[in-house]
Image (cartoon, rainbow, N blue to C red):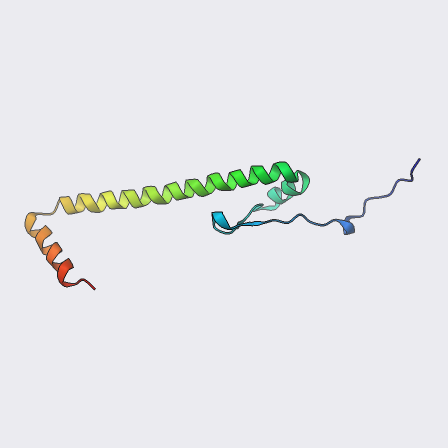
Length: 99
């Protein structure tokens, strides 16, 4: 029978925590819990964390697009409420002050 050898933590190499450029240069594991998950279950955690970051990134993009859409609708409604003279004045100001 082989002699039991104690575990030496000095020999342990930490797993790489890659930077995901496609999602705004964020690390795969973003906190201590995720780093531990990544260390213990590398293959499963990599896929899990990547999908989680992807979902968060897409949700952020949708929120940004929705905010842009909301602002555009508000500006459009504001313009539509202007009188004919105010619209003409705004148009002329834009034409003469164009840079």
